[in-house]
Every structure is written in C-alpha cells, then in structure tokens.
Length: 356
Ligand code: G3I
Image 1 (tube, helix red, strand yellow):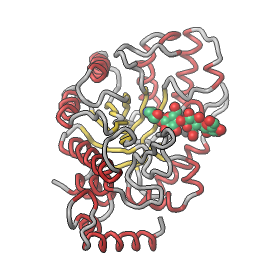
Image 2 (image 1 turned 120 degrees about the vertical axis):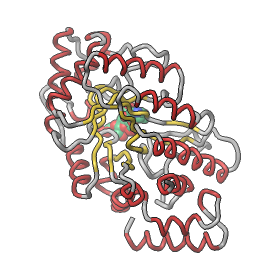
Image 3 (image 1 turned 180 degrees about the horizontal axis):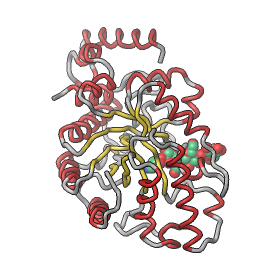
Image 4 (image 1 turned 180 degrees about the vertical axis):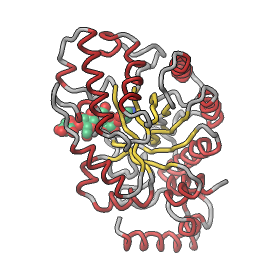
C-alpha cells in the first residue's frame, strides 16, 4: 500500500470510529490503532517478532503487497520458495532465485527470516517422488539438500523449520518416503546436518493440529523430548495454528502446551496462523468478529507465555491465501481484506501486541 493510501485509510478509520463504526467491536479502537502505530511498531517496542508468509509472485509484482508487508511485519517466511520441490528441482540443480529475492527483500527492510522447510512429505521434486532409492542413497540426497540450502543462507536465517509435519493425524510418524526408506532417524540426522551447516540458526520442528493439548501435541512433545534427550540440536517447536471458527483450541490448552514445550528448554513460534470462517455461524460481521477474537486470544497467549517468541500468519491479505472455498462459501482468513483494508482481526492482533 502506498503511504498516501495508508494515510487515507487510517483517516477513514478515525472518521468511522468517531461515528461509532469500529474495529474489533469497541468504540475508539480505530483511533487507538492510528496512535499506537503498525503491528511492527508494536512488536519492536516489546522485542517481539510479528511475521507473515510471503509468496514470490505478488512480492515481485504488487507494490501494495510489498509496502504493507514491510510496514506491518519484522519477520517473513517464504510460503513455498524454500521447499524442496521449488528449490531443488533436479538432482544436481538448485533454484534459489525466488527464495533469494524474498531474503533480500527482508534484509533490505530490516526483517528477520524463518526458513521453511528442509524436510516435508509435500511439495517434493518429481525426481524424488518417482525415484527408487536405497536407504544410503536417500540419506546422501537429504544430507546434500540440507547442507546446500542451509549453507547458501548461512547467517541470514533466524530459524529453520527443519522437519515439517512428520507426525500423522494418528500421532504415529507419517509413513512417507523419508520414514519408509530411511527410518525414523531421518529426523535426528536432518537436525544434525542443519546445525553443522549453520550453527547459529535456531532449528524447529513444525506441525499443525497440535496447538492445544491433544493426541497430536502429545506426540509432538514426545518426539522433541526424545530429541533433547538424545542431544539432537533442536531449539524449538512451531505451532502452525491453521484453525477455523468451528473448533479452535482453547487459549488455556495452548498455554499449557507452550509451557510444557518450554520446560524442555525449547522455544515456540506460532508459525502459520490463519482462521477459516466459511464454516462459522452468523452474519459476515459476526464471523469476522469471532475471527478477530481468535487472533487476539492466540496472540495474547503467545505474548504472555515466555517460551513463545514469534507470531506469524500464513499470508496477510485475503487477496493471496492457500485456503480455498467451495462456491458460495467464500473465505477471508487473514488480517487485511483483498483491497488491503484493515479487518477486525488486524485491530485485535494490534490490541494483543499493545497490551502489557
Ligand atoms: O508454482 C507452481 C506453478 O508453477 C504451477 O503451474 C502450479 C500448478 O498447480 O502450481 C504451482 O505450485 C503451487 C504452489 O502452492 C504455489 O502456488 C502448488 O501446486 C501448490 O501445491 C502449492 O500449495 C502450497 C502448499 O503448502 C503445498 O502443499 C500452498 O501455497 C502453501 O500455502 C501451503 O503451505 C503449507 C505449509 O507449507 C505447511 N503447513 C500447511 C500450509 C498450508 O497447507
């Protein structure tokens, strides 16, 4: 968003606020947002990371996207550009262009970068999906991949999602190519190789569905506890937080989960929050208010629970989101609408950041 457009938008919010039409359901909120500054200003003031996933296409083509991103966030994570499929498309070919552009954008604007991700069962290159490898061959491939990518960005990535979504919904390790060909030690090896390649980067295990206290989070806890006991260089757990209005985790359960992870000596980042509204009840305004409350609740829990050091959303404008909707049931999971106007969720996240 250009500065002129931002000023116009903010002025409009002040007028609406004065008329009683307000963000996040309470009078004066828009005025407060103007006075208190952007999400980034609020996060910096308390030494916290507020971030968003970035897609290469709009970053290259859309000025409003770039302007909003650098105004509101002090951390980014490439949504797809660092995944194995895009970045390692052929056995001996690495394609760093899109990821390099995102990292350079972040550095030019004083933002930190999370790296996402080094090992996952999705978005793998065709040559791995279609290949038949022995355990030793696949171990060598994985080692080469991690060493090459992590060394390429050495010193420039605050935290890597080393292994992503290794646990299935049953709580057992997912029977993907990594587990079935290498065995469960692919996880420990991945972290060791990432640490060798960039000893200063914080190394995370990242997953969805284990934000509160449940079978999945118990499985994640057991996995990372075992890693700590084996001396594997792991620094944190990423709680993705892809949630919907229907069945969100309770703030108390998320807090208990963050605390038990912290008791292992690990950090937590909320890595991919978005809130689906298509299955919620009520009018659109009611759904957006309920969505805002969830952003507020989850950000507040993170901010008040010491091991939680960063809060990232998976995108920031409803113009670009991975959430698809069936016809007639549109969705709007993020902080800004498709025209980059503030949504109630934006005000709510700012409220959480502004509170001490
Ligand atoms: O870039 C190609 C393009 O060249 C091709 O023509 C087109 C045809 O389908 O596909 C494009 O790639 C797509 C890519 O997004 C970029 O738009 C892939 O098909 C598509 O699968 C991919 O989806 C991504 C998904 O991960 C992959 O499984 C989503 O954008 C991304 O938001 C999503 O992110 C994941 C996190 O990494 C892990 N946690 C869950 C989260 C949401 O699923």
